[in-house]
Image 1 (cartoon, rainbow, N blue to C red):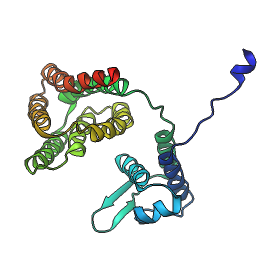
Image 2: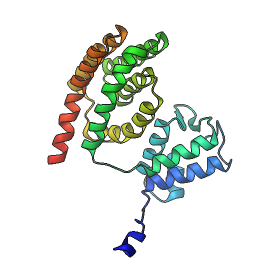
Image 3: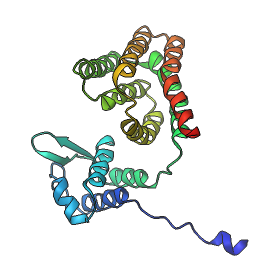
Length: 237
């Protein structure tokens, strides 16, 4: 048994992790600098010898963490950041254990209820303005019958920012991308469900505006109940 415990688990990188690692290495080495544009998805796909879906998923993940930004006219560019912090962040992105969907959602629920309670107490006028902008951006997408997963999650991230707890925001950034990926695959944020979510956001925003932490927590718990139920169903499938 002692010999067995001396062995280490063999980690096999996914194609997405390999792409992220190479981008990390190029940024840290200085070959990619702030404002530099990445090659197109097609060219990267040909260079790596893998499908464009893997390229797209890696870029989306790095976008979510603020390392890359996609501009409609100019493509994907590198954001400015402290290299040491960026290297550590990208390493964490790759090393995070991939838990089951229910565990991710359950963890998110605990964090979000605490986050919204603190946001209701600690939010500034600037925080409130950012929340209202995020809410309007979601409403605009829904009104135009467009995909709105990013806008939905942005609203929740703005709540985490308004909580003024940096650890909660960091943890949210860890769990949300994988949840978002499953939402996209399962078409969770669509149709009537998205309209219901928008109405619930309005209640949460109103409670934060009124600085009512108990009401904000109750609204958030009700808001997350559907996705919690959905994640339980995923376990039984």
